[in-house]
Image 1 (cartoon, one colour):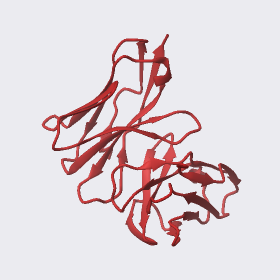
Image 2 (cartoon, chains in turn cyan, blue; image 1 turned 180 degrees about the vertical axis):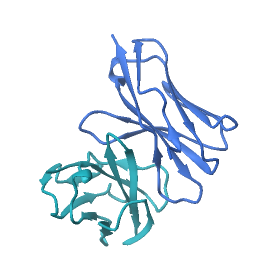
Image 3 (cartoon, chains in turn brown, purple; image 1 turned 180 degrees about the horizontal axis):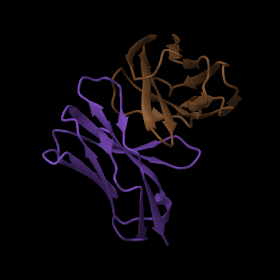
Image 4 (cartoon, chains in turn purple, orange; image 1 turned 90 degrees about the vertical axis):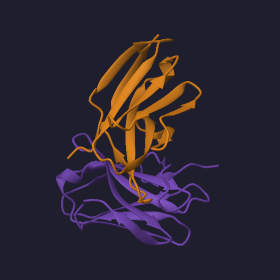
Length: 113
Length: 113
């Protein structure tokens, strides 16, 4: 069974631009969570989607948004990029909503110049 | 406010010996705990978990101990192998099936041959 896939793996943007990251969960998994990893803040929860609905949201500004499609694939979007948005963005999938055991993808490394 | 803390940024042990990684938490509402291992350029890989109703869970060379009164958990790896060298993250889940994991800052384990 294929694992969680994320595209692209690396991305370079400039301040003020926007970016969309994509995540395909493990087949059969219906819940997708997103996390941001930075050296200073560690791994922080962004949001969780299940059945195309955002169930929970972390403490991030409204520039960070996401969505989930009927096939459980998910995208997250960051608008008006700031230098501090440079991070590794990780997607995790789980079978159902609120499932504690989450399986992570390799991440998308975003660099904002 | 760091709700999950891994106070040791790094740990070095000899191959064949025991590795003990520690994690402290502050929120008594956490009811599920997990350990993840992360290699460079990969996402975290789920290792082992424990529910707050238990005080020990074992899986092969990995054992997690939970001390609720001290709000402390630890991961024991016996015997340690060079392939165990990685960053280990402790994570906690608040009660209520939020789908949100709160991570510690990680401990880098080096197992020397």
